[in-house]
Image (cartoon, rainbow, N blue to C red; front, top):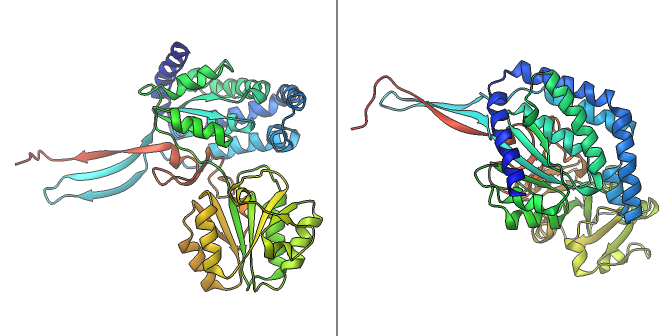
Length: 414
């Protein structure tokens, strides 16, 4: 497997040098060809996806996993649209981050450049194949993709369409590669490919991300769980609180931006009605003692519930005594992904936004907006919850690094 990954990385490196020299217009045109190819290949892609869904059902995949895996006409159209949207985004490569001039006359610039060869390991969601390829190409990077076995037919069909479209636009074939085997040893070889691969991005469950972070000899850009909180402050308007909470949990329960813990202020007057709406919508609630007192249908939460990413219609609920208690609970249990407050008190909202140390902090909005597309970034490579290089939705800018350019007029150092 090491030879396979080394060969793919070497070919990717050669392709990346060509890609890095291409103009903004050339890369954009190639991605528009790729989007058109995805639309033209819809029957083949959906056929492959049907095979994956059937196999997943036979294997007993959870409803959340199957939801992530499933494609239909609308979702496939969204994938193609996302690729086209990336094509229209400003190219970050060559952007000047800042300039300065030293007292000796040296002029310094920091300029964005591609990272190089990026490896992406992911599960379930076949849209990642297209999103990752589009973003990496747009930012001038080559990419080596390793999707999960549950989406193997979908991923291969999507990659075939992408490759055909990109080639039509002049992108070297080896700029986007899919590891051709599902052998887990291939992932190990990719993780150990220091010097051949410049950055790894894992997208998947906790066990996958933990393995990548533990074993990688290549820099990793990652997040673990999406344990997202919504705090309903005493000054929240009931209609807004109910709409935001229902959407944050029930719009799509299987995405990393779905709310997993609801915090309700003890002084909020609409608490019973709020939990009743969630229960009536088919959500199981697990609460502390004060939350259970709001509705007899709420079952007792365990210590483990506060640190669980359910990714299904299950929600933990706690009643808290004011903003400080809410923020303390978030500090103790949040995964640093996305946390939100609902309140009409602007001062409390600002304090929450400035105090909560998560990659994304929201006021009066559903946590399901935690998405690169919704942030105007186009498709995203993932949500980074660390503090180095990139944080929050990682799109084009997060897939670049920078170099210093120094311009002189014959200066020598004394």
